[in-house]
Every structure is written in C-alpha cells, then in structure tokens.
Length: 123
Image (cartoon, rainbow, N blue to C red; front, side, top):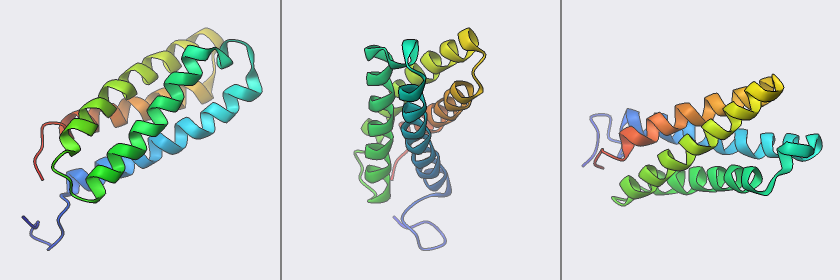
C-alpha cells in the first residue's frame, strides 16, 4: 500500500536503506584500511565479519528498495551481523585507540538498530 506521498517506501524504510548503504560503504572502506594496517586487522575472522556485514547491508538494501515483503528476514539478519561487526570493530578501536575502527563500529551499530526496527515492520 502506498505511503501518503504516493511512494511504496516509508520514511523509516528510506532511512534504513540509507543507513545500510552507508554501512556497506563504511565496511568496504574500513576493510581496505585494515588490509593496509596488517596484523590483527587482517585476521580471518575479522575480515570475514566485515565482508559479511558489507554484503548483508547491500542485500537488505536491495530487498527494501524493491518493496519485498521478505525484507523483514534480510533486515533481521542484517541487524545481527551489524551488531557483531560493531562489537568486533569497537574492541579493535579500544585496543588500538583507532578512530577509523571506532567510526566503523558506530556506523554498524546505527545500522543494526535501524534494521532491527525494519525487521518488525511491514511493507
């Protein structure tokens, strides 16, 4: 059912799409930073989690943009992955006093919260 402005995407969903796109970008850019840093930043579990986060954010974006009623499932998965990525990046930021990792952690946290809300929404 269309929103009052005629669109099929609510303002909350549009905001979530933007956060997912920003989180995807943040994880991609931070992953390149991690590869340059080496050491703990390139441990397999950390790299895998950042790639998972980037990918699920893109997938959740795609489902929401096309108005899929299955977005609740991708958003629920996205919320979980983003929470884990946020915690991992936060721990790395604390250990190394690393502002880049802290910024990525914050972006992932914000995305997780928004996706959690969308996981309980309807189209």
